[in-house]
Image (cartoon, rainbow, N blue to C red; front, side, top):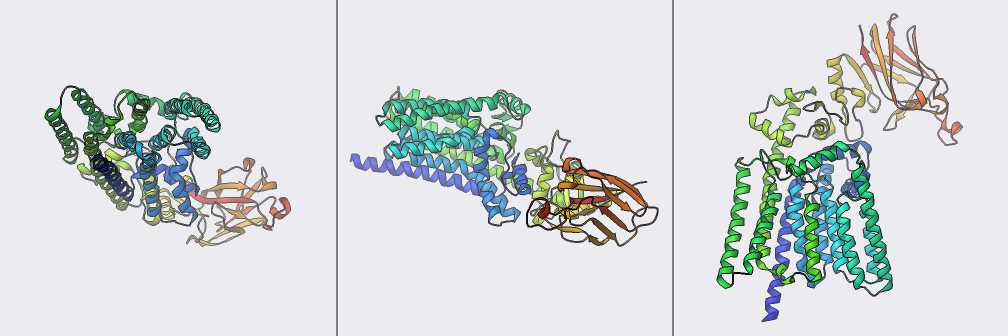
Length: 610
């Protein structure tokens, strides 16, 4: 009889964990197909990866988490995938699945007889990670899920020499996972020290001693990053939002997963208190009432969001980006107390707890499903704006065509400085025809859509059509040397080498650009200089239009914009660039390149003047 009950419990334990994790995976795939990874800073991250053609690291304190987030997309680059939609799906899916996969891995770390301790990582995931789930680009969820793997490993894994060395290796990346390890590291010190007191193997004891010291180093390093952050304003904003509880609610709606986490704590507290008083049917009746209350709360919360009574506010998820780490601190302490013997482990095996967690976890997932549907509406509105006009489109002008409901939904998801990057990402097959400006002038943005020379051009994105429209509107003629096609107004270009992806070198003592028609009477020539080769640095380059000659000296050979004015009184149809010291890399560097290099150009423009 005992064995049958034990078997039934084991089956229930595995089934409820499996069902919840499968449901979470389905929501993750739905979010990835909807490119939810674009939300907040996500659009900027993948945009910069495409522009760099590789990893984009921006915060040393989170280097490892960023590496894990970007690795699959980087590998997709390496095998030659260029489709923006496929890359965006891979990027989004990685962000969505990584915290879940690490959380599940913490389950497999647990020995069979300790599987009930998975209740704590499970609570973290559904009411911590999901509280920030609409901002999957935030690294806090990944860093915390990694913590649960290490925490369960050090508490429960049987240590021999090999396991101890493995544990040492997987602890090394924690140094640069995230600032949340400032306090998660304290838990790891406590757990490692406790395990040290239980071990007799000398090598294992040495390794655990090293790890305790290592976690102290991690705390010191992350404390430094907290005191001296890359962006002080970002730190101050986070602290303000935390104490204003904007991670939980705003004037427009609740962060339902975070709210359900608080509800879970309240119901469990009531249940534990009542367990000491009530027995038999009274206890079962109370559990039934508490479960029904949980179902009602979930129905009201999700239903109110669907009915737009409680608005879906994605920014609350951004403000809760480290919520999972904060609730993991007490959860890990409680888990440790069970291990230490302060609480009876039978509590974790109560069917009531598993039913309660399942109900509330499903509520958190349903809320995200509703939010992803609204996000899809946002993307549809954005694409409609892109299709409405070619060239530069001011945000206020773009949104006028939308209904009030569409504008309201747009405001829910709009990020203040990523609109131009989103315009690139949502362009059809990377052919950029329209760029929408940010809603307001940001303190910083990746590039200015009004300045042609700042526009990214790479193997993923081709803004040439946008540039043509922009130039036609502004009286500027732009020639992109990073494309192999010849502009229709140019007859020929002599003296330029092949396209190297980042610029074209001159490979002669002179470059001649021959136009089909006469050049304007008065114009400025703007050269986008990418590099200067060897002996030509700080040497005078001459540019000739008819009888008009101008000179410039590239300073230290660094990238720069050179602007030269010409009066074309001779009605010339040619621009000539004279290179002072054309030199081959063979002669200068001893390589096999025999080209006579001078200056590398990305583009040149002709701006009409009065």
